[in-house]
Length: 304
Length: 299
Image (cartoon, rainbow over all chains, first blue to last red; front, side, top):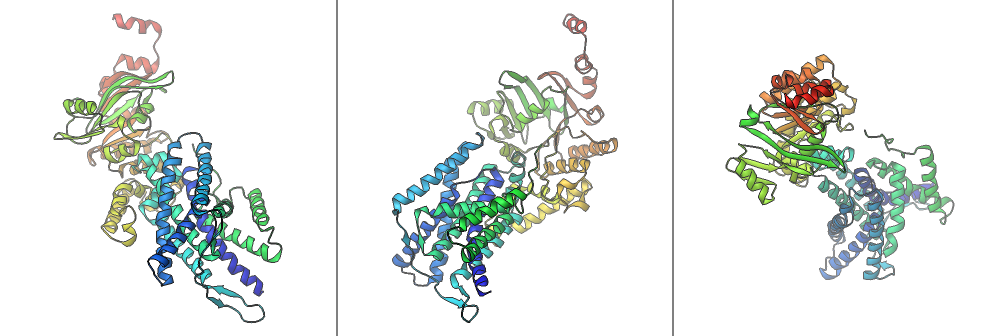
């Protein structure tokens, strides 16, 4: 029972990070029907940006307060990563809009390779250690098996929850969110109502990247190490999460992220660590056989 | 005869080719400010293509579409703007736009041309009210500081949002859908969806409203309501209307000006009475045998 509780905590933490990345995949897919394969690498870039800023803030500016440094890193990483995403959309995707469907997809794969290679060259191929932070833990239960909840985990779940509330509000209640939903349903009609579709799409990339940046900061802090290759596996997992939840559906992305995180953690704990990815992807395959549009996805309706 | 004295839109030598197919061939006509103008013609005459050119859906192969959003269209100003290669000129006589040079969202938002389609293109997943609010996107986006300041409640966003809701509700009252404001738009009956589309287009504050077959599929009672609504849009909202319609009871009853197309060419242009009695129109609609057609030029 203690083991179960501990794995639940670990799984939800990991799932939060996947969920934040998955939103970027699902939003972009919803609005332009493209799988942004570079999204995982944007996430990786954000973790590096966060590391560099963290070092700059603590070493150069000499800010000793960890919470303050963390907030600064979070905000700066979100802004800089969003800028990266905006540039990528501008040079790699927008010129290909209106061309055949696979063109932006190939461009995204190219962008993904470019980003990971750029980081490899600029930052070196080896693991970058991150100074430990928020190392305290809370003991949830006492006894032979101590279930612990670390400050890091609390922070990850808290930040994720807050962001999701803010993000939900953005999509549901603001003019930008309404424009996004309109573009998702009918881009041409949205344009004829005066909505700047190109700008709305660019903002979608920017918002997705900002959320991925938060995931990047949290990931860096949680694992204490970043590597140029770190965009790939979390990226694929988050994409799996988006598909599992129903691609195009925002609550689906979060749900899918949590599920993938939980499946992976529980499988590692009770069966085998080596096969945790196999487990996650098998569940995906099984769900898609029985529910082709994902758990919360809408069935594909042909537009007339 | 307002299309002669005070044209809102001047379409000149408009040609649209798709590969070898000429959908519109050297078409010129004017739309009068404050008029209901009907664009009619047999199936495949190119009416919807004209709409697609006006609203920026297609870039015309050739031709000019000068749109005088305000004031009188001065031919010298039109010539100067054409020569300058620009999209917009604020002349003392009024604001002038070159529609063929503008992207679609700017035609909607800057020049203020709104349109509906033959098929219904509501945002069916959104509520009825949201459909009308999304049409007021640009003023709201500005007031909310591109959604950033709105988050913090800075600026006049709350007031603007209340105004937007009030305007949407006013339109829902007018089209009799106020009770269904919070239902998904896709769940409304067909006739109601048609009315909602017109209301949504009107929420963008258009100067010219383009309606593609608004009466298609309506029963006689709904058709009569539509006539009333369009007259109100012309007379109370001071919005000019350009409509494509097959239902001649609608066309003849409400329009001030009728333009007839056949095979992408204009065959008649005038008041409903003039057009109704034009032999070319009768021939195009009812079909003429070769003898009459051949005999016509010599007559």
